Amino acid sequence: MQEHRIVTALATHGYCVVPHFFADTDALRDALLIASDAGALHRAGVGKGPQQQVRDEVRGDYVMWLEPSSTDPALRTYFDAMEALRLAINHHLYMGLFEYEAHFALYPPGAFYQKHLDGFVGDKRRKVSCVLYLNEEWQPEFGGHLRLYTTQGTLDIPPDAGTLVCFLSDDLWHEVRPATRTRLSVTGWFKIRPLP
Image 1 (tube, rainbow, N blue to C red):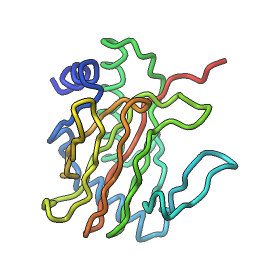
Image 2 (cartoon, one colour):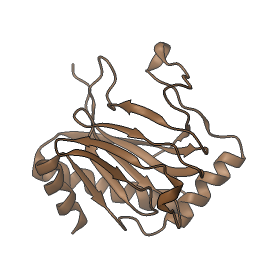
Image 3 (tube, rainbow, N blue to C red):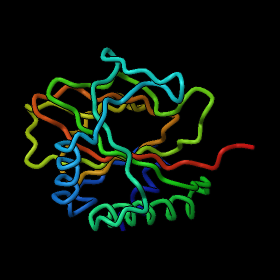
């Protein structure tokens, strides 16, 4: 069972890489590209709220936030899979994960995201980061790897279609390496409730 594997790896190593986690990447990729062609994606920023800025030297991706209530069949299947994972993590690790937020991410050729953590200053609600790749027939020479900085050293993960990478948002530094091809994913975060 994939959920059990992810829970065990998160508890042991703080991250997990699961090839073939999601079968219908074609439909998700099509939805992302249709949204991109329609101009629905926008440059991603750094920071939150009034402090958010577009900084080319930090990141170069385009994003579109997704609605969990979407009626699109592929997105519905994706959010259902992530809900099953949220319940499994809570059941075994007692993390109190309350909700999941996600966006499409498109990295044009040459775009990157410098080494960072996924939390915001003063807002530590993001607890588990999840990246699902949508790139068919990706070759190593294309680049675009996700680089995790683990206690065992760096780990470079190719953005192969259907692969899910999960890691602890507050603990693992990571970066997106530049690619020679357009790089596509769904990126999301399991969050806890805001503190009172």
